[in-house]
Amino acid sequence: MSRVEVTPEAADLLRRLRADHGPLMFHQSGGCCDGSSPMCYPLGEFLVAEGADVLWGTLHIDDIEDIDVWMSANQYEYWKHTHLTIDVVPGRGAGFSLEAPTGNRFLIRSRLLSDAEYEALSPPGR
Image (tube, rainbow, N blue to C red; front, side, top):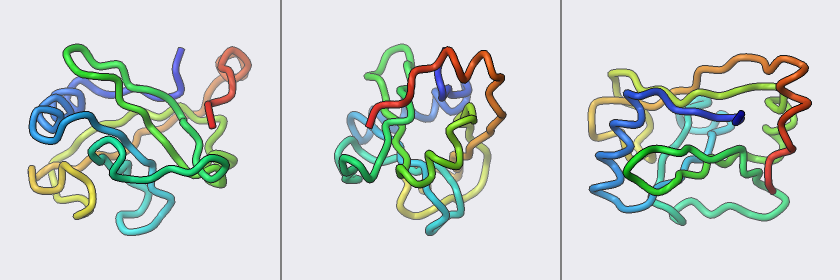
């Protein structure tokens, strides 16, 4: 079980972005710029800070390196009972996220974890 997953359509886009930009990472936006959209960056381009950001989970996609998904520690407190799925839809997203020029944008689909799921998951890394 994981706190985060990716749809097949989003995985396809991530493969294309990986081919163009190298290893990738996500940071779940806390409301700045593009609402609460997941922002995709080349690995290391968005600086995360110990104590300020939480490693929410890791996306495991065939054929490319794992992709870490980060969010602010403050936002984690609001979302810690939530499972996130990164999806993609047509439309222009934030100019900061790598998919912006493709005519698509990443978005988050979320659901509450069951009590059993929440108990089974270890706290995310910091």
